Length: 366
Image 1 (tube, helix red, strand yellow):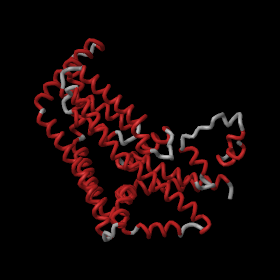
Image 2 (cartoon, one colour):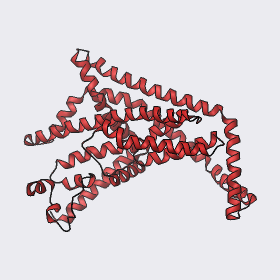
Image 3 (cartoon, rainbow, N blue to C red):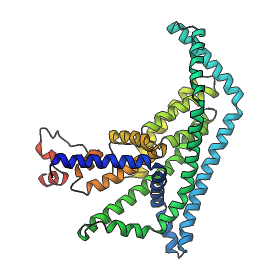
Image 4 (tube, rainbow, N blue to C red):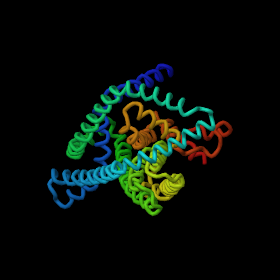
């Protein structure tokens, strides 16, 4: 088959996969999340089975523990939101003061009078209110989707753990017996990486919340724990989440404090915690052997979010890691594994032909 035809078929296949993800995201995202969470709960399930717990109970107890943990997080977050709402009169006063200062600065810097600013804000507000109906209907649909997502999740996790041996047999039946060793190796590596990644994320949420919230609390920043919780969860989205977390932290601080110095404290605390997380804590906790380059991670997260929403952004990195494991073990797609990874050649392949070859050939030459 000509190369052009093969590449056309591959592109058509990618397009069809993307279309299936966009159309079926309501079904696929809970299934994918349930698959990853099932891998994380698998060691607990195996422990209960080793001590002769009935299979149904060995599956139910880990799911119950995870549900309780998620419930505690939701309760903690809602209590912090309630505290923020109780301070609404003070927040309104602080926002008015900051907006007044901003209006004065705009007037002095750009000669844009307060009346013109008010007229501009009024026009934009009218546009916003005109589209309020669609926003509310979209939000209602989002709430319904979230409830459906988290309602199906425990059911899917239970069934995936119950039928895990059936799924494993299904995977092996797609391959020639000579390839079963490679398939088993890829499956075990996938399980190990996903478990370490997800457990690492749970630990990451906990220590970022405690560390960042504690630092801000010591400096007297209001709603310190809320800022810590928001940043901890947004930080699960690599690269982009930290930026959004910084912005929200600054906005919460602006609304609850009249002192601009508090914003500097918040930004400095977030920078210190993020440095510790990225360079010391998270590499030790996750310790993944599969490393994804930053460009692939950012592009993958943006594509996933565009195709299937916020839940896909959280799942993008483990999915890319699984794809890299598969590509690295396939002669046909090994070059894609190189593209996803961050193992840069020591020298330019333009000047050293040996570095143009596959990794095994390069190792043989060395």
